[in-house]
Image (cartoon, rainbow, N blue to C red; front, side, top):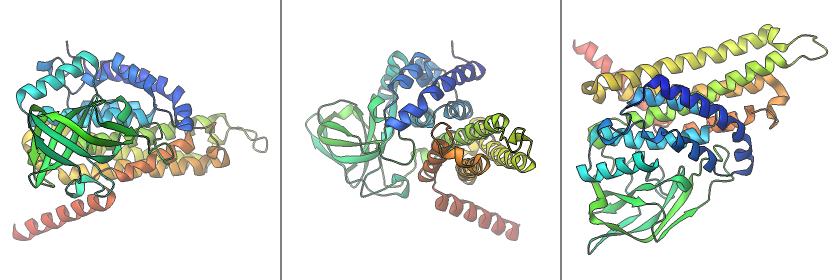
Length: 387
């Protein structure tokens, strides 16, 4: 029986509280949160976007956004890992670009074992694949399949993934290949532990050396920059937005708790009673509420109006831009409000500040998002002039 969103949010809230107790240690040690992954699988959260016909919950983007937002309040690194899984599986479930048997097999393993999936696309030379580059990773046809060679960057949750959806150059286009993690020739390289943000996200490099893939796992072939189904990247934009919005919400709550407890002897009362502190908390609240309203609205419309998805690129860009920058604004205000104590590890605020910065790196990045919005405004003006 598929679970309801309210049931899943209760589960996500309980997990977020548990993840929060581990987050500081994983961040400090740059250790991968295998304990959190085990909890995600025990709660069957990887099944959420899997279609009901394959044994999943069959829930859409709006539900996944709410779940990710709540999980990120506990630990952003773990939330980003499951966000990657959600946006890949959710997009595949809606667009069905693969052969039916291949997608059914992928879903069956997610349902049976809690298998996690992520796209493996970025490369050191190419940068973000969202900019339309052709990968240096190659797929060479051989008898019965292909041999992959290359190096991929920033593969979030790499130690926990069951399947890697590897992009490689093939026939002057881009092939997508399903590779089981741990296959002979795959090496995970921890290049991430000294990063500024999301140190527990396991965003490793993946090296592929003569990795054989059966022909049936060559699941897609497309031109550089070609969108799956011709649609904007609704799932990824909203999933990333939800994670960073959750970071900002966690920062607001932590700041409010500190202000209620902090009683300087010179003041003789909690700093929460100071007008400038209340104004700061109010500003943080307004920024978060505005970003959340845009995110929830576009995610709900994505689910409710499939025929309108091709027109939502500007709204998706706005949601990603607003949520990411809301997290950055709020975590900055949190430290300004708390003062020097916010720099210490005994409070999570400095971690929230660092984690929020990672949102700038996910597509659409701010420059691209603003271009999309600007072009949409110009198009609207042209239509008004012609109307």
